[in-house]
Length: 149
Image 1 (cartoon, rainbow, N blue to C red):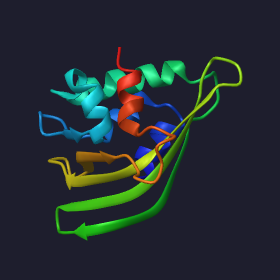
Image 2 (image 1 turned 30 degrees about the vertical axis):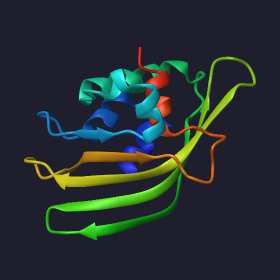
Image 3 (image 1 turned 135 degrees about the vertical axis):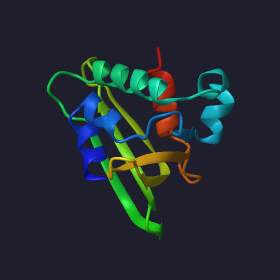
Image 4 (image 1 turned 90 degrees about the horizontal axis):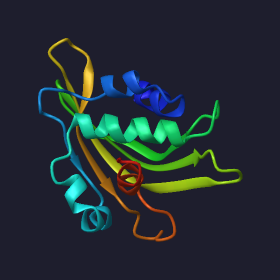
């Protein structure tokens, strides 16, 4: 999780990509509101779309500023010898190139992390949820869709 967190904060595309399992096994389930709005984008979301979206997010983030990503109420809900489910509320602050513009996103994520063939642990499934008590700030799914181009 620390690798994932740092790859987002410090805008490292390769490190971010390395956090996900390949070979068509990765599955992203967007927040319901995002899927309703951007169904065509999320229909066949793969690692390539994940990388494409993150690359655009990095480009939108201003200069040397880091992307602020914080987890709250994080916990490992289930562990087994080969997989872990990480659950957390998240908050993202994306400093954009436009002066005085700071985009904020928040929600809840469930990440299923499993052991890959090489022995490392990678994200196999990501379920994203908009927090029910916050309709002001969009979810990470919306962030991915907005920067998917």
